[in-house]
Length: 205
Image (cartoon, rainbow, N blue to C red; front, top):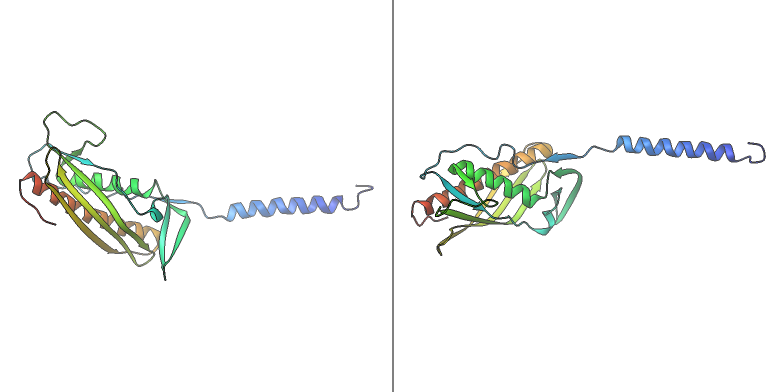
């Protein structure tokens, strides 16, 4: 452009910057989303007279993992927050859904937390507080949970602590599968506690 000797160079640099920015966007890895509920509810035979009603209360988890991003252990007290590997919803919701489905499947029960139970029905209230939820890629998945079962209207309560550590397969999918396996075992353990109370037994942990 006559009278502006640097205009062509500026325009060329602007185009180059735009091309570089677009290339950077194209090379960014896509976000991957994972769920703990898929396959978490393996059907089980109910050992008490149907129908059985449970009330799975909202689960609590440590603050550092109560998010959508996966948090993995690096060692030496360090963790990585994986921006491109996320849970389909916040981790406490994921764990709560997995336990609700898993326990209900084990017992042939109905979770009535969000719905009224039939009049005079026995409802077993379940609470779970996750103390540790650890993930280490290509190594292990661990869940350490304090949980309780109480029949509504009664004072007797069963309170237990369960720790499950599962070997993780390769990659993020292997880690998620290990967490699912740990939650399946936790669901079975809690279901046993409900069975004991429903049968009028003083079940232990």
